[in-house]
Length: 299
Ligand code: GUN
Picture 1 (cartoon, rainbow, N blue to C red):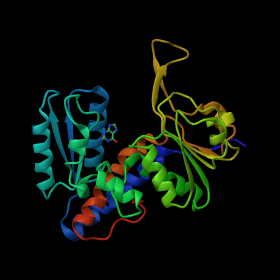
Picture 2 (cartoon, helix red, strand yellow):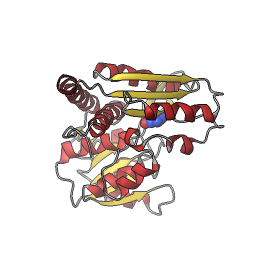
Picture 3 (cartoon, rainbow, N blue to C red):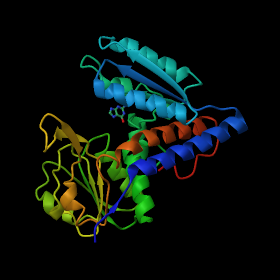
């Protein structure tokens, strides 16, 4: 039987609608408007698209959106000064510094300057530590989106074998922590893993986050497994080399015949990232004001 296609586009729309409902209620009951500030340094085209989409979706959810677009040559000290200002601004509940930053800037220094309570990316070392010790943290958006989709499809995840392929700080490591938090038996695999095929075949939940186009074929997938493909890779179009197309880290055509459920690329995990960014901004606003957190929108 062919796999269930997990529709991230529809799921993300539902999350955004839930966020918008909570935002409207916060305004009505407490006169509060959650605010998200984005700092973009330089003219990287992909980053500009991300930031434009973030601004649009933030406004659509009824939140305040603040944008700081800086020249690529902006000194590190000036970026730190902006972060300090945003940390002190009570209208700003979430701060996102778009990565990558230009080479002359120490990204870790900038990220760790953000007030951890406003770190809606969940990249600050305090949030990394809180997540890994099972305490209340701000959780990175893409792994949070994957977790929401897994819980929605599978219900209770406890006892399942989860394999995360990829060990990045942004996806692989926090994804593994979240799955461990939901009582999965977790393996983190990577480019040096001895028998990657066998490791993947043991997975009830397979999360691919390596950034290598169609690297995981269908015969690495356990029959009935739930496959979450985080990869977004642009490759030449097979029918027209002048064009490109997006593919994931999983070879979709062969995996869909084996898996129980699978996220497509595009339209799978991708749209969940900004939806979870909005959810995190709402959560940060609630926490900052001592209000209950929105249910179902946190880890
Ligand atoms: N660049 C690409 N994706 C992201 C993200 O989720 N957060 C930040 N800060 N930068 C990014």
